Image (cartoon, rainbow, N blue to C red; front, side, top):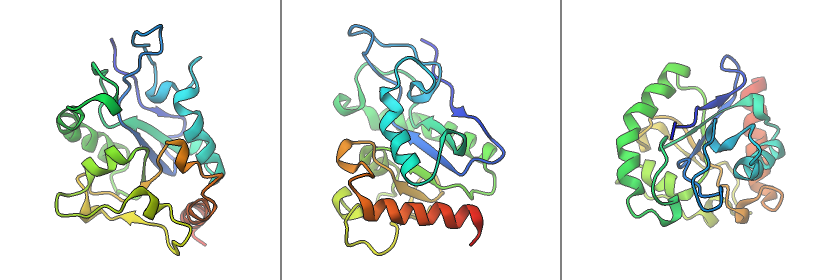
Length: 190
């Protein structure tokens, strides 16, 4: 199977990267479905990206505002949640991903919205203590929680943007507001 392409409508003016785990799926009657773009964007199978898109819209971002790619860009034998060797594959893809990100955003100004805790745990440096998702998404948070470039393997700002329904931004109003302010601030300079 051919690996899905990254998705971006506006490479010159996008506002954030969206990073998924891998394209592995078994939605074609138990077989892998070939996806043209990461998350099957623009396909007849919108379910992979629909929750993420709703969360993006909740913070004022749209398809033309993001560059979407997967950490592991090949189809694997098991879906991420069942794949005990996912980190091994992620390690094999990290150099390629860093090169791609640097080519598209050489000044490293665009944050990366990371769509799963498993990806985030892989990306943070070994000596970094990643807070649990419930702490990051807490209603008590006063500021948006970033993983700074010096604390992760991609050397860029990482933001939790988990796609699991528990972290739906319609339910996480405080976190949604913090993200909304961040992108409003970063895009207007206000």
